[in-house]
Image (cartoon, rainbow, N blue to C red):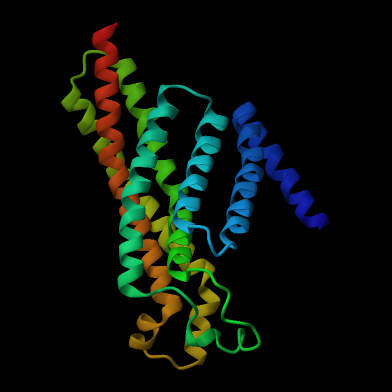
Amino acid sequence: MNALVWLAGILLVLMVIVGGKSGARSFFSLFLNFGVIFFTMFFMLDPSANPILITFIASTLIGCISLFYINEVNSKTTIAFISTMITIVIVLSFIVFVSQKLMIQGFGEEEEEAIAGLSLYIGVNFMKIGASVIIMSTIGAIMDVAISIASTMHEVCRHNPAISRKELFKTGISIGRDILGTDTNTLFFAFFGGYLALLIWFKDLEYSIGEIINSKIFSSEMILILCAGMGIALVIPIASWINANYLVRRREKS
């Protein structure tokens, strides 16, 4: 416990030194987002609740905290929030469809021993829970791309007020291309870093490549990475188009 407090204190100091007030708000937003996720899990325990709807509401709250609380309410954060929510709706619809077709919900055969003494009749929809887990895992990356594109395009427009809508859109796409590769690789290596022990376990079980790929645990995590990558790819043109139209209209009005 003392180690956790010390690490949290060091993180707070570093974030305040680097980010000032914004860094302090970023630190406290971690606890606010944790509270949102905790209550999301609490409400999902109700068999009559719809996990997809709860996830969408939780994603909206997380977006408000991560964008408006940290960076305050302005045109950049508003456009980033709108872009994020549009992307979340599209990706969520696709994830629900994929989860139904691939049946990635539930536990793999490797987990049978761990759940042998537990009741399997818990009364919740594991398909929707699985879709909720995927979308909650992707929202951070989507917001990161949305606010990066919005901030950069606002700066480009401020330094070059005469830029056309088409050039602004191309600028946003160009920025997004640079972000796309790094964010997708971040998600990929985060998976392998978090599941390195699982891969070692597969080796000890003498799984073939085909058995690893067809394992429910492995395939569900790979689907998470692919869906997250799709969300990052989708938010780039959405955020670029909304920003380009907003900035040009604001310039014309002024």
